[in-house]
Length: 103
Image (cartoon, one colour):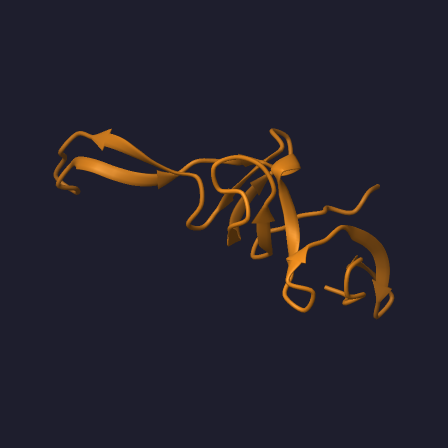
């Protein structure tokens, strides 16, 4: 079984699209669809009807981004990096290729 490249609460950088070069934290990942929702990225406005709970109007929501357009962000190297498998305390872990840091 392969190791997941991107997981919840990871810091990622967008490689393609309108938000290319921007970083954010992953809120959720859907591996079956191959998408992730990243905090503060891929925002779109949606018209919401007024209800008893909300005032309605235009609301900004974050839409999913394809995983192929995201890379884990290495703060030490200050760039996106690939991930390899490693061991940490006898368990599977992820190792950043740019700095060698195990996460």
